[in-house]
Length: 462
Image (cartoon, rainbow, N blue to C red; front, top):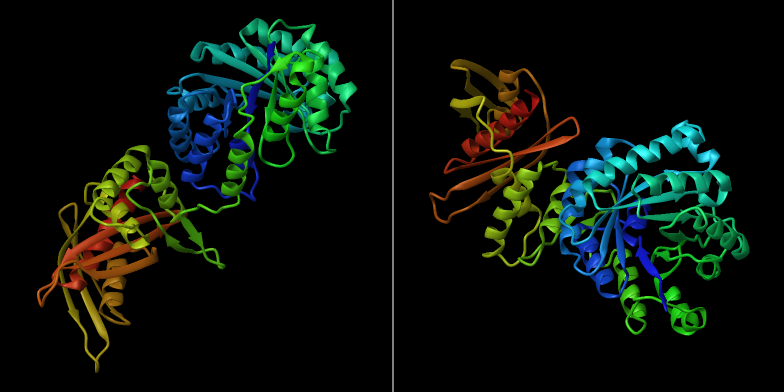
């Protein structure tokens, strides 16, 4: 019997839907589930933020063992490089050249006519083929495209190296017989596998999938997110009518319902390790020694930090060291880990000396002397308490005010001569920088923490 190739796009759809707020752990767990239920390919989300998306996509691609891992690229050479960087470690990687093929979308989204889009497709497929053995053309809005152009662009992609074509019914406008006719037309123009991604906008996804298969389609695209062909529904169709149609697929008929229900539950946010309060602030973070790199990076990102790939690795290594001694890791621990492990830079400012005067009958004052490039710079300020006065004096020295996003102090040893640890988080524009300071003098620890964060800002601005 003919084998029907099943591609699941649940992760891709969830990333595009703002209703789903998946943590890194959610995404990796969903990938693990999909990898065990018999789908032939998993499509991961396209790259939007290179730093964030590359980390999670590479993690998913590396852990998938039984499926092809697909990812869509944009319409530039750079976007193909970024996409391949996410899946290069996959057992079976595939780059999808995803472009609109209807007149309305080509002109609205990219302001190009059909001939120019076909030239672009040929160029992109050739570039992708140089990097990845498997390249697929994904035709967005295919059901509203001119059939002759659809045949032409698919043939051009195949001649340039594409090994498969997917036809998408984004608008959800076709009835089964129309869908079948489109598939037949494209099959007559190419000699590679033709897959279909039917929409359920008018509750026709399953019917259109069956019609497409009868017309010669070699595969279908499924998802557990509403609006697409449901994997469990398609499995039922194959179980009940596949033999009659002379086709079969790898979907696990016994376990597909249980597993897709688990994915849907996870997509409803039941396992997120970051809790968001009603006002949008982060009310809690709960990580354990079992948390993955993806979990830690997601928690760090949610707390407002933007880390490089190198710093993400350093933070995770420090996290594992702390987690080996501590059962649960919360917001305070994550902040301290980031401050101590990430973006360690050469010091621009050094604390030369400080004098603090404070009491219940006088206003707190601070006299801070810093050095920069061997030059001593001093600042004097009055504040609402000794630490506030010290921070204001530092601002006077540097001639700039940074928003104090958070300030924490805690004891790290016991007794009258206990060491105190201070954490300062400064915001510069939309980026967050944290610094730590440790001293038997908690005011001194606070000053050093502020300077530690300040030096990171200054270094990053160079």
